[in-house]
Length: 200
Image 1 (cartoon, one colour):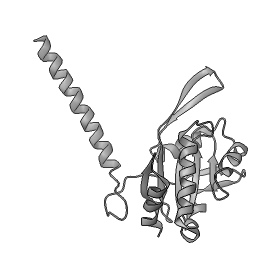
Image 2 (cartoon, helix red, strand yellow; image 1 turned 45 degrees about the horizontal axis):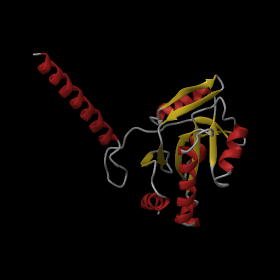
Image 3 (cartoon, helix red, strand yellow; image 1 turned 90 degrees about the vertical axis):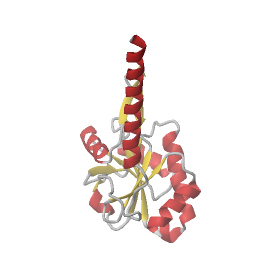
């Protein structure tokens, strides 16, 4: 009897896990405007501060595609690797197509990532990169709109911590609406090919 209860509990856990995975796959199945599927509700209006200290909103980017990545400047590997891939992919697109895309890096660590810090960081990846920061409330709001996960991981002292965060590139259309997403780990060639489908 005890074995049966254990087996039932194990089966239940497996079923729940598969359901959770299934929901994630449905949301991120690569549906985009080209496929004509129902797009997930991602993005929305925002007001943040760019790397020059200027207040900007989503309206300032209308008319161009935004390729958005959420991360932080103290990130040891995922963020610099992803932004380097973005820079290489835009170069592969060619000047005409690349001009249609604004690469945007939004911090999930506004306490340390000031406008000045963001300026130095995004500048290392290209002059066209935009770094956005803001108050903790502003960042929390935009992260929620983009379904971004971010959580502090305590370090040895209060000022030393890392941030565990999701690693997805969001492509937003000239109208500000979600177009497609790209997962971490894509090569520059694959990202360039994916962008070309939408940007031309």
